[in-house]
Image (cartoon, rainbow, N blue to C red; front, side, top):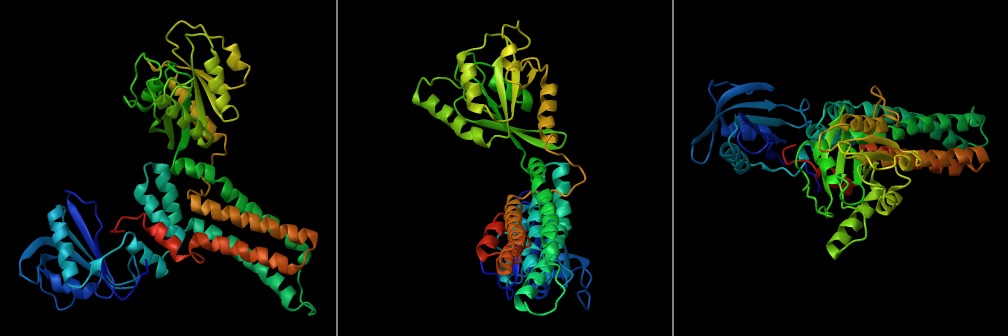
Length: 457
């Protein structure tokens, strides 16, 4: 989408449906003119002062009919969300009233905004950078206090400031390298012998940000937990017990679950996406085979596998085959049906060196201990309540590419290679950093990012 600043956009910014208040907003050079056309204040005023609420009626200029009693505010640039002239109307929350007011605005000269266009204009006008713009959507989509805290820290620019410091350090180093290229014979004090150490410091800062993504992803998206095991060990019952709802069908018939079923639980502010799967065995029909194939395709992406065993039954070849599919992953052995007499030899599980917990999906015993073990997996990755966290996959990928470029630059410095090679890698690193804040991004990337927003944001 090519953004034009010559037109005025309008959209409903509050969720559609019934509610106490509806918000219809405009941004662009015609915001004040359009508002004056369609709004009649209760108290006549000679001027329309900026950033003040006025009580009155929205009027259809064509018919002269009052549409709704509203509050209206005009906000003069640059002290606005988009750094353009803006106007907002706070109507009653009925859908008919909001749609009618939006239609009147468009008849008066505004056009319907594209998804995310208000925030896109805020970015293009320099009020926020791209990382902050993406954090606006994160705030809207936050489902937990920790997720909201991370999003607010990013919208305040804390990540951007950290990126900015790394960028300045890299630019200063590049300036010295380019001086060496441009004036090789001049007596310029260049401490080339310190370049490898300075690069190591910058890489260290980047590595810490990249490492924080595990925790950031867990807070924002949740860790992927796969329930795996042979048929009839109680996998579906375990899912239902963890999510406290009848999410999966449970029957005595082996192989009831054919598809992947998931739900989310929250443990101390961290989301865990729990997925029930088809029992792993030799399939009896094509449908069951497809269900088992889906499990196998999903295993590589799982953060944690819950290997469910029937503690009331003997260990079987299907149990061993199921473990073979997940060996090498982070596995917690769940000995289910603890409410029944135990027949399984726990020594088999002990020999594999796995974390284990005895539970009863029927009575709920052991479930809290299982949740503790799930949270411990997250904590073992370096949980840090006070640190700045990277939560966005795009940011993490750009940081990884920056880190790789700087490591290559250090390799050039250590090997005494021509300084032109070092300069090339430093410029590549700066370009990757610029992708995060939006200084070096394409129109296609902007379209992709802002298309995820609602129309009124």
